[in-house]
Image (cartoon, rainbow, N blue to C red; front, side):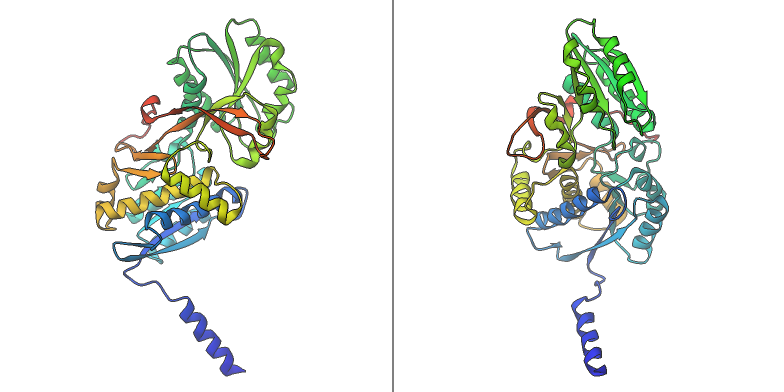
Length: 393
């Protein structure tokens, strides 16, 4: 029996051969367990599919085999820091990708700088990542909070439109409204009121009534724009208060497919979204949608597209630099354009934020879908949005 056990152990060791020094090693740090588990799983699926697509199914770049090393940070900043340090120092990865939660991603930024290694941030959205907490080793394929807010302002704002906002009484809500408000002012629209409520709020009656009062006597198109993360369901609860009696519409950004189920009660709602599988028309997205449906019996979602974009950026960078030397990678990536399921993205030289299209959508109810269909109104291209540079470079 002991001989059999030894032989089995040898076989297992051979099956999981150690990585070669010539391998191209990439770390994925993500919240595989914890509150953002669903997002993290999408990121991993998208990253793996993106590496497959970018390498024409060879999983090699310039003759080097790609080895993907995954580490779960549970969405916790201390674990994220430790995982990234381990990836750089012990696993000797060439570059890293991650993470899911913004707090964990912010904790990782100094680790990339200390180790002088590239970190591609995906999908954490906090502005500070490519803003005041940024350093030159950080590139982000994910969109930032300003891109979310500004695209929504561009989508719904125009002369003769009056908007009121509802946001969470925290940095996410206030920063989002601040970016939205600045962009809205450039569209000719008017901001009538701002309401902030705690993130744990479940009764929006008083805040919604104040917004109704601020808008009801205004001429022209009247819209309440909601910026929200997590539970509480403000959109459908405000809808239940019948804003249409004042000719008031609701607006918000896009969301992942499970969350879009609630949008089925909001036909006609308009806003801007980062990604919806049926919107981009290009060969990469066509492949992603078809293959994802085949493999997972579902369309790709927000963070699947994001993971795929990070893979395309990493492979493009190594091919362009003809090296994984950090300085050569940075030189190659600054200003670099790369293809993604959303079309072209470009790393802005000043802050390494990926500039990218967003999509003005309208909710359409399709009885054959469990979620609200996002019908494209227009693509908001890079040049349609003025995304501020917030770092101190």
